[in-house]
Length: 379
Image (cartoon, rainbow, N blue to C red; front, side):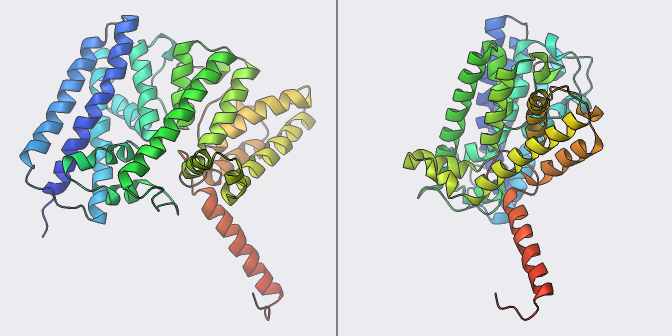
């Protein structure tokens, strides 16, 4: 039976790489002087120390990972990184239990977006930024980021890439897997920067803009305010968030191809991108009409504004909110929940079964219906 030491070796390297991410909240704590600097420094030391011990004690085990090793490493990586990410919150928020804090960190890294923290408006800035940064790292996959570092550790990364990347787009975008990971993160970081600038121009402060850009691109839905994006009550901010949620819900391989070819025609050639846009536009228009006719809002434009933001947020699995849509007619809420299962593209930061599989299911269902009606048909 093959030993699991090679997995432990790579896991140690991942934890050491993850320790670098603490520099962002440490810098934030110093800027805002919120008293959490030592908490993050201590957590960073623990993370790096555990990772180094794992790595150095298994340094002779550097065989190429098998496919199942990649899946095991992804699973253990999320669990351990969520655990070490909990350390600064355990110190800074002593009233919270480890279970709640671990839940919050796992929710962040997996971009689930559920939160158990109340009073986000008064949370130390570094803690708030840490929550959103974890979502951003998890959005594209911190494992994919680590692939660019694995060769320096003497370990190949293709198995890890296949375990992390969803759907049908597992072919490398560049000849080398490390270049593929770097290309994806370059596009991801570049679009995030554009989102930050756009949110700032729309009226957010820099701190809120950075945090909400992180959670928007990760489609995680964390916010710095208990009222979420509804806190700002700004059509401009909502429009910016809608645009970037849709961007994040599309395949980042398509974004990379569009960037490399310097042409938006790439999106027209992507059936998933067209399907995502078509479903979202048609859904927003029809649900807004339903709410207007039911008297929920006084005008169609008002209904369209609130429906567009909240429907796109739920459909892309982001989870932001500006209205209490639980009070909307049942048709609207059920349709939004259905969309959350099928809307996002493969290779995006969203969840669900992906639009690619939805598209294939619809095509297969249509084919079966045609065969029932015309059993002698040759297709």
